[in-house]
Image (cartoon, rainbow, N blue to C red; front, side, top):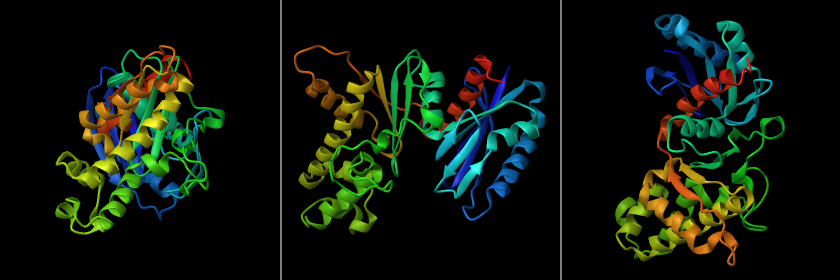
Length: 322
């Protein structure tokens, strides 16, 4: 049995596991990330953690895959920048290759999570898929004609920064009106808190007492209980998310759009609403019958990054990239 090590780097922790080609996950481990620590110190901590597990695998260990946030150059194996981590010009894949004498592959974390769904999750047998993570921001990945689309220098597919509102809300990227400003979990929480503060009759007060304690799960729960204010917040949220998905349907004609991240924990309740929005609007083509896109919820959840990083390694080895 061959095993690849999947390394999922996040803003607060690094999660790892050895994963077999059949999707068996074994010897999981993780550790917290000190954002103030130098990137080489974090690398040393990762190496030590891997070395503690490695003796159990021997020749069955075939390589490493890394999913990392920020601007990633898969060809060079570098993290060119990761703002939340304070990393810059970090050749993490070549350094891991040199230390362990095994091939190492790296991709943006959203692309890696998408590949996990392709290999081990809900998107098996699909060749054209859009993946959106609805969390602090809106992360995204594209799988087109059977391949991850990385774009120039590996920095493409930033679908969360496509504009859906000209001169709209200011985004952290510096532009205005980005999808991220309207369809992220953060945006949903802010909109719900604003609505709650302006509607003292809302049932949302029963759930969180103050707008500062609002979260996405609360607004959905209040909406399910029939609260009119929460209904309007959710309706508007679905319309923004739906419009973004319609744009991606028109641009890429994917077979499926996968929703992951915190908001996707609503599962079928969210999926059916977005699917209905797409079906009713027919992708903006009212006089033709375009290919239908299925809306899916991530099957791997918070483990998608680990699975995807391991899949990245298996895929790279299959294509003879090392």
